[in-house]
Image (cartoon, rainbow over all chains, first blue to last red; front, side):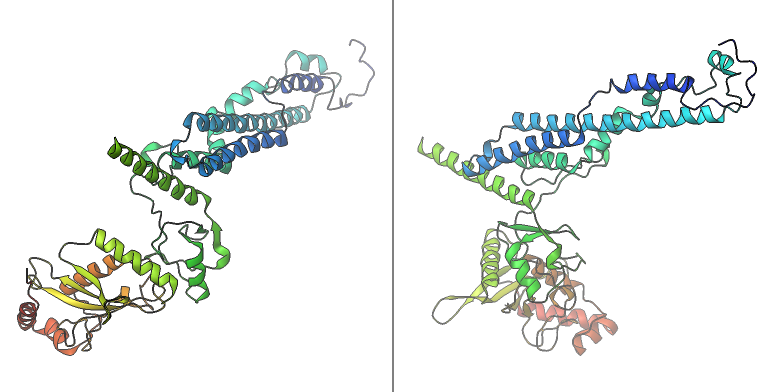
Length: 277
Length: 159
């Protein structure tokens, strides 16, 4: 690197060599040590498998009339597995974003250094301008926190559904916990969820929920009502109008009623047993 | 009677028998063969204690239409019942009993009778339904109170 004389002063060094290349290599080394190299589709299919297992387990409980004796350890483990899978994926997404951001920064610094040419190369290598010393770790600690990952993971609808199922198995009449908010003080508590159809006052069997106002009704009566030309939601004080297309099956409510009835049945059996003894 | 209105009324009856507000009564009337007609009920609304309506239970008839609970039940006091929001025919003027206004199929019998009890002591001056009670309530409160108390004697609690 000593015979640079005679070359034009304004000769620019291609962006990729030699300094940036060095740093790029460094990043590539770090990138290869990412916590998870699984693809999104791999993770998704793993999550699907766990969710299918839980669904099958609950179906079995329903069919064998054992809904009142759900194994919470099993369900908790399944929830944890799904949490870990989503976390791994989020971590990977975060790393990829950061790697790209870091690389962009390096390119920019290299371009902005106007006197970055063969003549100044030695000087440059000795005293890299600010920003060239960036490593993935410094980016990582500045942007991705455990809390931000947990927050994103908690918003995953499939994970929320699993947690809701668990809550219903334990307390079929309780409102669902607010998984989104990390602030426990803000969570509203108290009150019971009605398991009966507001129109027939019977236990819900095929519940449908309005996507507009979130109220739940039994399928047949509400359809009858809509067919007869009544469009407003039957709940007093609710000002939403309904269309048949607003109604979607409410599988969680169905589970609530099933769990509730199973528990009642078990209670009756126990009382009978006590009377006999 | 449609099957929805039938199941609903059976459940209303079941729930009422299991639990209803103190001092109230409500039951389907028996037809001449002794069978129950779930579309026709009689009920009693006790006046709130410590009000001019106290000490009496006011009778009402409840008629559930074919389209119940899509449509509200029709509820009547006896003819010429003295109250600003009751028509001379006895029909009650109350927004939750009006299909065009605040009726919702989720409103239960219990909520209706409690609403009527509330209306007794708190008439709505915005919707007059009869001349004598409304005028007296607005302009001559002493006469109004006297008339209401006289009426209370007519429906005094027998127990």
